[in-house]
Image (cartoon, rainbow, N blue to C red; front, side):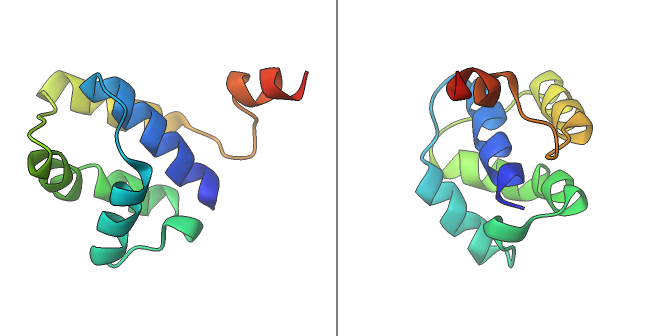
Length: 92
């Protein structure tokens, strides 16, 4: 589900403190054998380990342990069937 990818981009950008390039992340996921269009919760959580570290290292960024735990917790609690506050506001 594409909403997993969209949410990951937002949460990862918040975690590192700058806007990450969506297309570069998309390509990195494809290189890791994932389809960003059809991600599962398990795939996203697994990606948040070594693949995210490698992606960020290519950009000179680092995700501290505490921020990584927060990212994992946020992604684990994300429900793609419920609209985010941003999505609800965008409909108004």
